[in-house]
Image 1 (cartoon, rainbow, N blue to C red):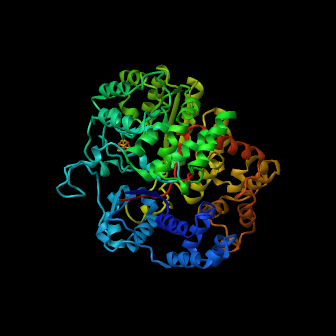
Image 2 (image 1 turned 180 degrees about the vertical axis):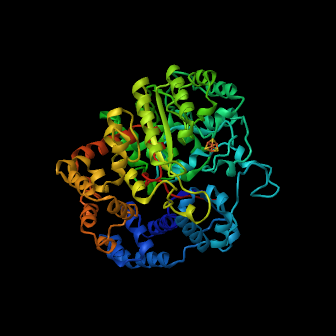
Image 3 (image 1 turned 90 degrees about the horizontal axis):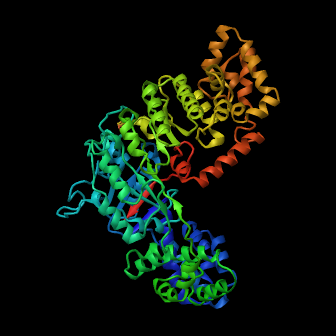
Length: 616
Ligand code: SF4
């Protein structure tokens, strides 16, 4: 079995490279193939002769023709996988293009289309479209009954504990780091029109047994630091008090701490049991090398000597056997020098909690576990008073780190969007708490508009959407806590916010720079110089946010003068404003430091999120 995230083509190249290198080692064991690994991959992928030359440079003449022959043969071999099945997990519907491309590639490496299993969110929402486009019949909904994938198999896939080892099969590091993933409930009691949960998980289950799965994960992969709960609406459960009790039994009570177990010992034990050799070879290699940076003096000398003797320096050379052989020699040094300081544990109801279910008793219960952050949904202005009350209760019971998604571009108006952000800034100041907000642009769940991110809600337009993204550009989509930040980013009044929506993007992003250059004032003057009719005409052009051919858009010289500001792309791609650059660096540091912020980045600003494939 093999898990992969990213371009499926790259997995095929990786696998080809492993087989090629093992064949090349039989030609010469003296050549350092690990150093040439990347060039080998590039050659297998591109068949470019320049890459072949790089591989061959420095290799004795007598081996060159044999090596060339092997490489050419491998590179020209059509990519066919040896896998019985290819599972493709689909995510957001707007990943349509990359998902279809992936399914098509999967088709090209298997002889039987029925070996491709497509499931997940997009597959459940766009089943017919996927089938019509690719010929593959996707699986919809949950795998919560026996025999869904394999007739006669009694296992219920949704009830299995997660296989954490697969995360080590890939280079991508999940921002969650050390965490248990589970859910205590399934589905939701509500049917919000913008949400896919009622379609994906139509039946609300108010309590799912989790403790056995939790203990199984703990014994197989070691204790994890944090608890990520993926429930869609946990507060709707009449058994919420039992849920809190179970969370505490898992070791997540107020002020709980965590000491990292001996990861090397766990990894080696898994190698002994042959749990997942690909993953645990990679993991062990990483752990061994991470510790090297902490060692000094004699420990470092001895440790490095063993790594060299047992060929553990390059991942390509590492085998299960040489890890098991070196372990008795380095285990004592590893255990003595590994991190043992206690760390605070956190619980994250990652999908947010529903303010409408919050009561004094519920908040008291939540305060008994180390929640960080408490994510309270603020999807529309209609729940304003309920939301404010929930935040006040959180503050009353000592929960000081809060976070929320602000849905916009649905049925809301830009004014509502501003009001919700302002409410958070006001609450933060009044209650002395931190509220991070994450504006999230609505994208339809079905139809053509679901396949991309270009949908514009009835009260929004392209320019306003881009303006909001420009306001959030420096902070990667995060509305940081603090009144000063709020006023600086969104304006201290609704009028200022509306003005920002009309402002050229480069003037929004590099605010101080263009203000200091008086360009922003000139833009204001040029706007103010228009009469009412001209303003209407100018706004009709601006909302389309396409300024490539402004002369074709109007003959009016006053409007053309105004539009010329929108051509000023200086600073649109590059941040030239020193203050904005500082802000961006500050937020980059924050995202690196705080996994809970990183985890919440929305898709408009997070380029790391890619499609995920599982191959078995
Ligand atoms: S309450 Fe939340 S999970 Fe439930 S339908 Fe509404 S948005 Fe979706």
